[in-house]
Structure formats: C-alpha cells, structure tokens
Image (cartoon, rainbow, N blue to C red; front, side, top):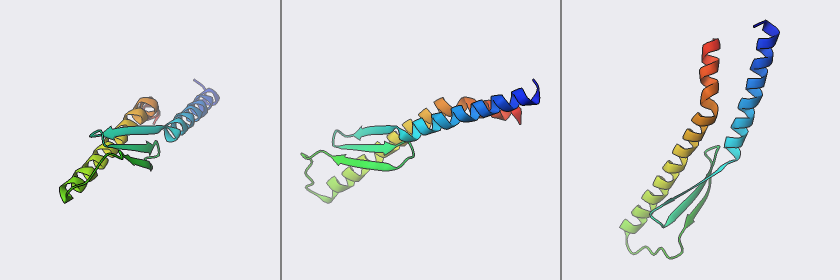
Length: 101
C-alpha cells in the first residue's frame, strides 16, 4: 500500500473514531438500583441526574447510608456500560492502530 492510500485510510479511520466517540458522549446511560434510585450518566461520565423514588422514606441513618449505596451502585453500573460501549465501538481501532506502530 502506497503512502497516500495509507494516509487516506488513516484519515478515514480517524473520522470513524471521532463519530463513534461523539455517539458515546451523547448517549444517556440510565441505571437503577434497589428500585429506589435511578441515575442518568452521560457517555462523558458526567452524572446528569439522580432520581429518588418519591415513596422512599428514611427512618434512620442506616436508610440514608443504604440510599447512598444504591446511588453508588447505579453509577457504577452506568460507568461499566459506558466502558463496554467504548470498548465495542473503539476497541477495533486500538488494535488496528497498534498494528501500524
């Protein structure tokens, strides 16, 4: 493959990567935990929203601790989904670029 063809291929891959990255960043990842908490995390890993079921009533300090744990779990699940999508959409480019270097 000549250099011009290789450069065109690299530019094409770069554009595809940028589109895939933009798609990931614009995606909302919604996760729930315990049936009480729902979080919305953007593909940029920005926490956009925390929704607590209005029927939740805290009766003790342990209830607030449990609420915090549910928020943490929902966020963690959302972050894992972001990582999975990122790997699915961008992983092939990492292996291709690794072979070129």
